[in-house]
Image (cartoon, rainbow, N blue to C red; front, side):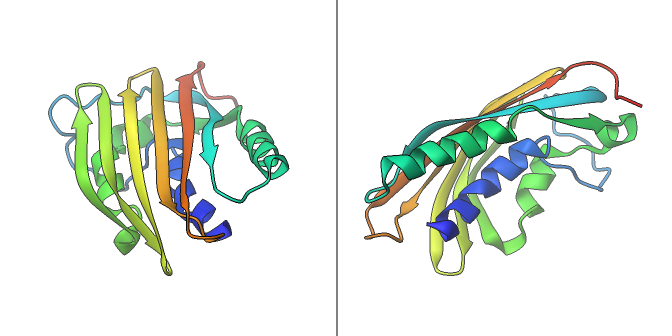
Length: 169
């Protein structure tokens, strides 16, 4: 289960990291919305967690862990905002671990899907939602085979980031 969760959190890491940061200064694709500089608060909610053979108390514990990760704040400087490249971060942010079959980012929307691999564990990963200058809201869906019996498992996380004002000192 730990391997699945590690691969599954690849999508969450993308979203939690402000949909990725890139040090490249490549121009944004047409229609791409850039986030505004400032203090960004991120909330994570476990929407769905289905894994055959996992007791309810483990599912409850997972839900609590995601709730504890909510409310994190991150300062996005103007320089970082200017360099931010969501499409670039997705395409190279995880090297060979992920292969993207769908990569549509623009006009304030994200619709990305692919497969991520860690060791022998493969996970289908999808990110769908909105990307705005003041708010991003992305549903991250991970699907794969359970290491506990091989049944199908699925996890969905709602990751919402909101610009709550200027960066704090």
